Length: 94
Image 1 (cartoon, rainbow, N blue to C red):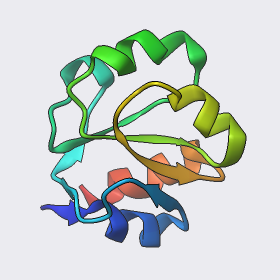
Image 2 (cartoon, rainbow, N blue to C red; image 1 turned 135 degrees about the vertical axis):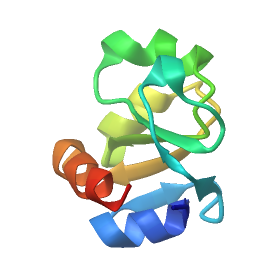
Image 3 (cartoon, one colour; image 1 turned 90 degrees about the horizontal axis):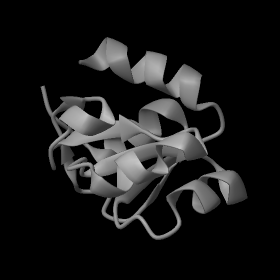
């Protein structure tokens, strides 16, 4: 099943920074993701992996925390208040 990033944002009460029409076919870990996948970036320890990942979009915390984590990483972002809860909700869709 495939959703647009904007649709996923609506389902989890998040905001998109970037292309809301990006197709997302699933959720994958940073090293395994391709342009059709959403990956999670919630810790600075994983910034290098996010930078080299093929993920088309990243799930990050809302506000300045998410912006700081994703600084310099050219990806569409799905920003949410609680990334853990949002990830659990999104996993049920796929």
